[in-house]
Image 1 (spheres, rainbow, N blue to C red):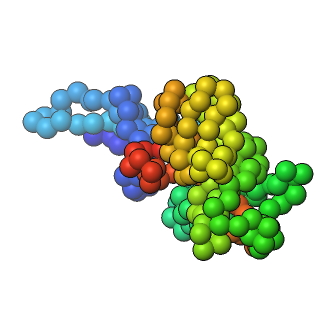
Image 2 (cartoon, helix red, strand yellow):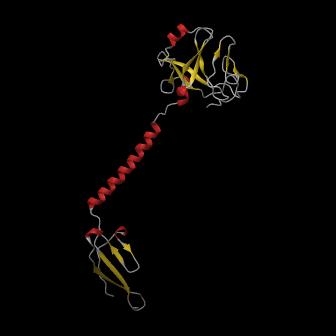
Image 3 (spheres, rainbow, N blue to C red):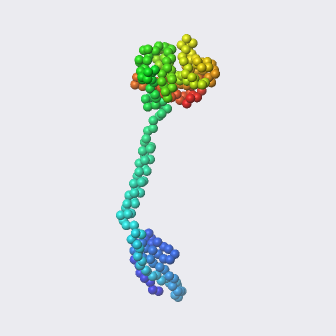
Length: 231
């Protein structure tokens, strides 16, 4: 049986097909054809035919190295981003709101638009005082002075919960009394007489760098034990 001798090739160098075997490293196409039965055994005749492959079909080494570098860079970038996300420290916004930090609050303004300085305010406003300032979102907001001449930790929104009138403080009655429809609130802004359906909204009141700061109230309403309806 006649045969053609080929140089050894590893399995990774050979790609089998229905019509033959292709060796990319040598650009050879080896076609196999069954021979006729010879004696008691079977013979296989192998013919080797060299074929040309266009240069643009075979990536050169430079292109392979470039693709490997791009793949390595993509993997490294993904790993770096995952690590960065795991190390990122996010601010506790609820804690910021509760502490009255300047990053989460609004500096209170007095009647002429100046920042309210806590020390100066307490020099001119005595115990039990309720005076309007500009608070969160520009809403009229009462600052409350406690009996020990300190600012209360809460501020009271002056907008009536009935139809939105600004409710004045009545020092003689020790109440907020709405002039529009007669709704009344106690000295902490809790509704005690309708037609207003809800208590006045609250805000946290704190001092940051000497200035009075209003911060959104996010906890239970201490006056009613309910969740804050304004939050």
